[in-house]
Image (cartoon, rainbow, N blue to C red; front, side, top):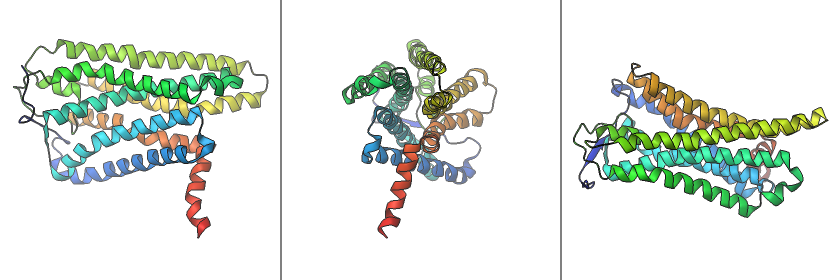
Length: 312
C-alpha cells in the first residue's frame, strides 16, 4: 500500500512534561547551534582560504566540518520550531527526508573519521610518499566513496517507510524524525526495518572503529620504532586531535546505544537528552578540539581575526 504522504502528518515532541519551559530550554540549544555553525563554518572558510591548509589532512577535516554542519542544519529547524513556536506537525515526506539525512550523515561521520585515520597512517608510516599517495584526486575519490556508501546503505529502509500504513498514534518521541521512531508507528511487518539497521551498524560503524583501532596500533608500532624521543612526541602530537574526535563520536554512540538498549525504565527526558547530546556534542567539540590542538588552525584563526585590526 502506497501512503498518500501529502495529507498525512506526524507530530513532533519536545520535552514531555516540560512544555512551559520550552522557551528557556531553547536558549542554550540555540547557543550550541550558533557555536556549531560558527565553529565549523570558520574551519571550512580557513581551509578554503589558507593555502597552507591545502593538504589531505585538512581536506578530510573540511569533510568532517561539512558533515557536522549538515547534521545541525538538518535537525535545527524542527527542534527550534517545536520549542519556540510549538510547531509540531511535519508531513510524512519531510519527515522521511529528514530521517534519511540524519542517518546518512551519521554514517558519513564514521567514514570520514576512518579516512582521517588512513591519512594519519600514511603520514607516519610513509612520510616521504605522503603527498604522492594522497593526491587531491585520491582524496576526492575517498570522499565520494564515503558519501556513496552512506547514501546507498540508508536508502532501503527509508524507501520502505513510504510503503507502510500508519494507523497508530502519529506522535513521535523527538523534535526530529528518526527511522527507529517512525517504524514504531507503522501497522505492517517491520522485521526488515528492525534488522537491517543492526547489520549496517555492525558492518560499517563497528567495522570502521575496528579498522581505526588497528590503524593506530600500526601507527603506535611505527612511532615506537623512532629513535628520537622528540620525533616520537611530534609524530604522536599530529594524531591527538583526531583521537579526541574519535573518542567524542564513539563515546556518544555507545552512550546512546546503552540508554536505548538498557535504559527502558529511565524517564523519557533522559532518552531525549541523550539524543541531543549525540547529535550536538561531536559537531560542537570537533572545531574546538582542532582549534586547540592544531597549530596551523590556531594560526589561521589568529590571522583571520587580526585582519580587521591590521587594516584599521
